[in-house]
Amino acid sequence: MIALQEGEVPAVTQQGDYAVVAITKHGVELARKLGSSFQNSDVYYMSKFEKGDEEDKGIQLFSGSVRLLLPALFQQYKGIIIIISLGAVVRMIAPLLKDKKTDPGVVVVDDKGENVISVLSGHIGGANELTREIAALLKAHPVITTASDVQKTIPVDLFGKRFGWVWDSAEKLTPVSASVVNEEKVAVIQESGEKRWWHYDTPIPENINSYSSIEEAEKDGFQAALVVTHRLLKEEEKHVLDNGVLYRPKNIVLGMGCNRGTSASEIESVMLETLEELQFSVKSVKAISTIDLKKDEEGLLQVAKKYGLEFSYYTPEELNEVEIKNPSETVFKYTGAYGVSEPAALLKSGASELYLEKKKSGNVTISVAVIPYN
Image (cartoon, rainbow, N blue to C red; front, top):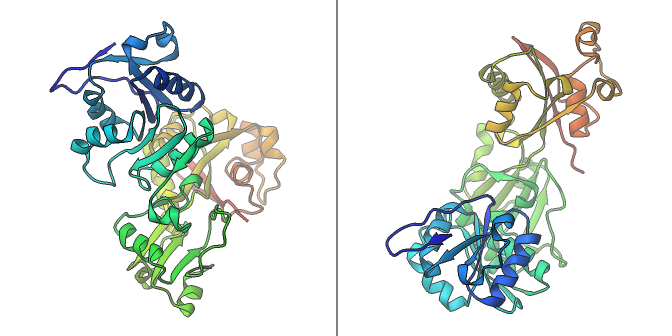
């Protein structure tokens, strides 16, 4: 049990990204429901409502004022779901607020579970998305007041987030958001990535137009830009970011093979050098793909972990089902597959052809495929 004391930040055990907090009998029931249904959440409630199964369920009990628990949760969690009155929550979190780029998303649920309210860090902290998810789970009413949601336009801070898109820099998020909300002429320049990013049941606002290239957008003119591409911009193109945000979709698959025991540093070096040669952003790499013989290859695993990449592998039989231009009898002799990096990249990406067929560098072989999101 966590004994809360004035002037001390308590030690909490974080397992998920979201904390669910309750201090009333009805709130505890809602918290337990969320904890069992809402993936990646940790539940906290007052010890006087203990039911006896908290340890088995990973629920953390506390005694004392919940106000003393919040500093620890603010430091560790991406989002906090609090089943307490809105006024009380506002008073308790006010001293903890620092910056909308770093504060966690805060969502309040009323004691009856009828309303779910996005309170803090609606966009960057993800509270609006969190509000919608919780409301759907509880069959409650989502309350969202940020301008871009009310106006049903693009929330620049979260654009493509559900696909895993990341922005290169947060520097222009605020001015570009202002351009969107103020109905200035905005260009969505999308060279790659998932296409179905508009999720409202109304048409895209007239001030927002889509283009397949920077050149095409420039012919039409714009006041702000949302650029979605996996490639590095050329020097003469960078002016588009004067009032623009650059998003990196996750659409690059690296097929990789290596000699047993190849170091992570060598694998990483080949990966970065290859991406630089292709003028691709490492932020757009989605996965490393290889043969199942390499599923425990420490160097590959370390690189995948360092960059937060998916790590997939295929059997020789699966790899041999893919037609490649240069099958190798030598590779077949040692692995049972006529190729590793090429078919692995094609299988994982779903692409019909490779962007980079095969490159051998030291102990590493690499192929590159781009996921064809249509």
